[in-house]
Image (cartoon, rainbow, N blue to C red):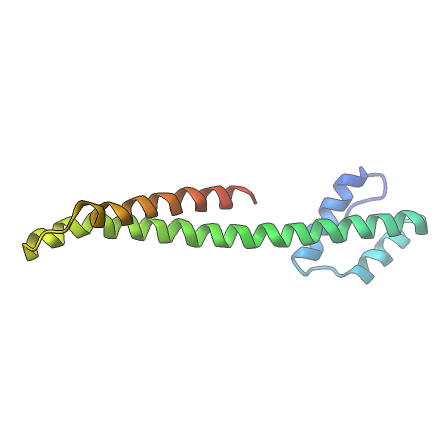
Length: 121
């Protein structure tokens, strides 16, 4: 719980995390702010800002999970791209260079995109 003397941006961030993680809802937030003696106008302002921040936190969580999937998918693509030449040697059919390098390049791209998305959160 955050007291009413804490900076408003710290309050907003704290309550947004609570709402985003489903530990608090907006009616409980309003009651908490009312118990602290916050004015009704300030309560409305804080609730609006908390709502916007909670929505943004949920978006960032989605980006993080998408980034994790891209990262691990990229690693799998690179490993498969590195295994293709070994498999083609055993089968002695030979694969063209572009067929071998394409999964490696795509995998590296996915790894970098995934790392970028995971760092946003």
